[in-house]
Length: 181
Length: 169
Image (tube, rainbow over all chains, first blue to last red; front, side, top):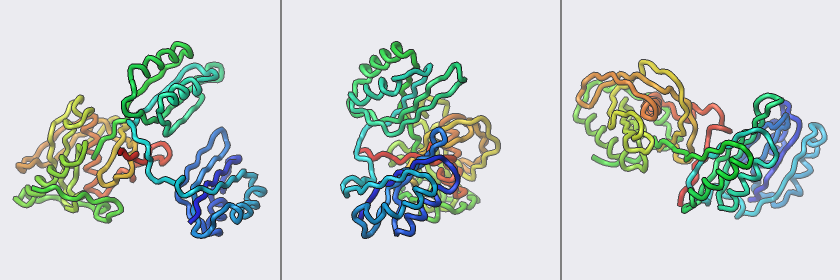
């Protein structure tokens, strides 16, 4: 069985998902995982698909030509190795939410994520948005992260403090508490 | 007393409506003991409903005093509610819920902040109680089970509200 990643980007309008899934269905592909979103009017979709026989993207790629030209979509395919497809996250850590907001300025995402990467914090979800009025834009970033076991929380807080002062942003870190029912 | 296996979605019994309990017989008492044993045996478990162990009767148990956040808030400790009915609710809150019957996911679910519940207790006595915060969420989640409603039925956005549970070790 071959696994592939498919990414689709293009100006949002009705029918994109139907067209992409039609091609996949006609080619005998199975959609295993997918997500999509709209960013500033651009529809973006990423899928992991499988096919019982196909091993390379060679057969699949031409099947998307019509969708590409007719709908003006960018469709990119990649073959995945078996060990690249994981259904359970191997990374262990404590789930937390980090919210960051402040006056819009360049570097907020980089400054925060750089420090997280240095401490081997895994980002599992990231959303950024500019909200507020045109003359007073506010940048909002919400990250879901897994903090590795044994991370020095005091030291991380100190680092956040430095970023708070430097960028004049508010940063809150809190554990995600799941209610087990 | 026994720890019972928890039914997992897509087990069809979880989508059934449970029947009211007519009186607290020794058999019903036994079901309650088993429910409590099963709830306490699950890590972090703060609530359970009879249909989750395959008994289609309107019985739930909740005890948020065992959880970190629950213990910080106003709560009733262990609550066994038979034929619970939510008479009124107010406010709103979003809590990340996990369910023993849907082990692979957690979800942010919007619930009422405050509920007024009518039920019968273990001794067969009619009780009316108010609950807020974390405990109110637990009650609403468990009462949903009695009507065959799972948290997946209350997710409003798969993108922002549903989370694949990360496996730890």
